[in-house]
Image 1 (cartoon, rainbow, N blue to C red):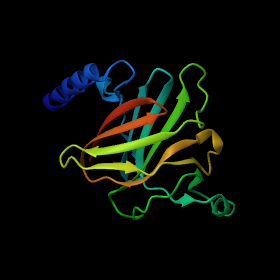
Image 2: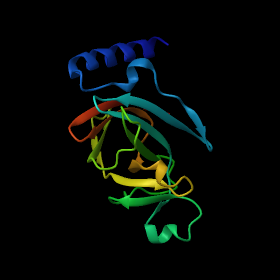
Image 3: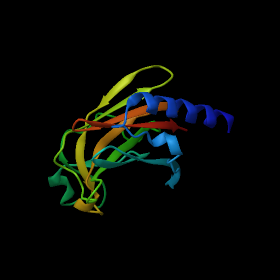
Image 4: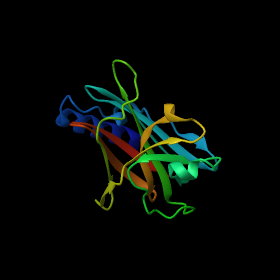
Length: 175
């Protein structure tokens, strides 16, 4: 509990320095670990001046082209972007996805550029995620989101998500 208090204080300080255009999801403990198969999923929310963002991290997903989706029964249908070359089936490969909605209307935003940068707090290694726009095959286009499969070892990460010129920061601990 003491470690979380120190982390929360650090996040609050970072938020004060970052300015009003950035909302830090870690400030109010908005992460909700949820059971996802045999692994733990992570969900956090943040807002910017214009957008409401939801970050979800769970088990890797099968990425499908629209042609493959015609005969598939599950997976993520890629609308644009590229598939990451992460090794599927590896315990450290996770599916990182960000849902972007307009704060006022609640409408899905799919016409703005989205970038995702993952920084490992221990090693200081930064990875720019090749962002694909996709949706879950079983959910349809109402599930439109951005992200990809990524390699995330256990540890603490800062995930910076930019939508157009606005940015949100998520603080994540991978078990």
